[in-house]
Image (cartoon, rainbow, N blue to C red; front, side, top):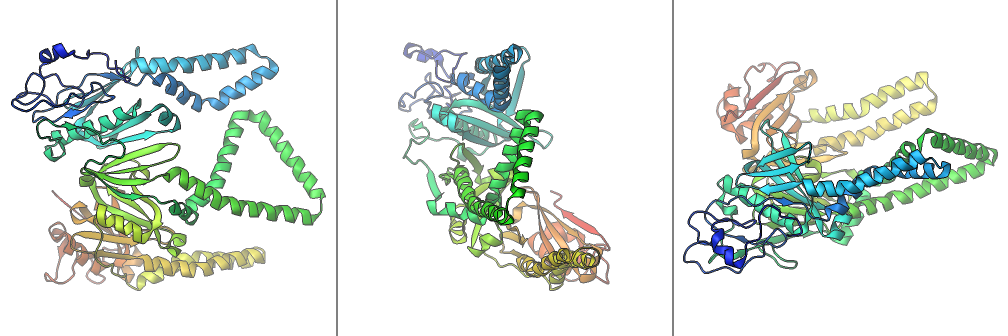
Length: 598
């Protein structure tokens, strides 16, 4: 039996190979037109591949692949499953053990011991009951002994196969395989195998993606070999149809101090710690902690004011030092040894120190990309790179192609791995500047005026300062606006505190939506949204000139927009049908949508 426990088919002996006929080894296609050993007639014999999921080799065949035998998870699930349960209930169990020991409560100690015994038994139960089988058209995952469940995932609906491994899995040579597939109702379903050997995880990803490609008619993804040559995963240090686009250098870890998300890590960690202690220790411990904090405060109030000020300054300095330190540590743990490579027709992004994650994105499903930054990152010309992918759940994390880094290096990767935008972005009308300034300044100016009459002077001063800071913010928001077309791709950009430039291929656009408020209509502006069947689903050109946006959409997808346009000649901008002739708009609060009817 292999480490992953194939149980329903015995390993064929050398003498019984001929009797095996077209029986397919794991990951091997055999069928009509093959010999008794699963090879084409007249072809030389291939080197025998090791049997079972720990070391299989796929033999290329022209016939449709057959069903593999069913397998269990790795026997090391006896170790990982109890620890996974223990991680979720560690705090309550420890509290029960401590409380039961100090007060010698046999019921509490007995309950804690029963919980630990149940966790240990869960490993054996999980290993014994979970089975998976890769069929010719479906992946079957069966669980349970009394209450049984069976998940059947059509291979042609698989969207992605991701592999991850936390520190424990990596120490034991295991991995977790997550299979995401499109559900019949337009949603998604997921199959999860925790845990199989790392080699079996790679084999599963390779086999599932190849069989899906076969079912979809994309024969280019099928293994082809001359003389029944062996097709296997590349060994460590070996490359097979693989190109490495990027490996994160150590200097990039310092870019984390430019990200507000990483800088706020100390506050998140502190809030999490307080929440865990409050939940695990109970109300009585929380009351004691509160009494202790109150006592410290009362003693501090009796001291000199200078000592209090010194303590406050020291706390601020410690916090300022901790923020960049925590940012670098968090960035390093998350993106440790980040690597972006191409393997066949897919991009594979790997990252993580404690939990190693490998995400596979098919290039045919990548419909564009996003470049995102914030004001701090723009001072160092640093950006994030994220793919715009069809049918991908958890887009914010799984679609990441590069972490924060220099724009010049990110653009080099886009040049090789994707398709860069080679056009220019058109500026939006000056009226958009007035709207940006009004939104950034007016609310705080009104609050400052009200505070001057109703509140202490310092409150009015704070709001007045915020109103002044709104001026450069509004100007930066206006400068960030833009949209353009290079003949192959369309790009829109907006935002300041988080500026995002989205680039999508023309073929990905499935609709256009114009939206106008009353104030936009008076200014001749509109929000133009590109509906895309990928990524977040839509990307907007905010406060664009209405007539210009209509002409822009018509130039990108004339067949889609033409039925909704009226008026003018073929070279003149036109407005969507029903637009008012006086303002060239949609009417107060109006909306007009043009969609692909195909």
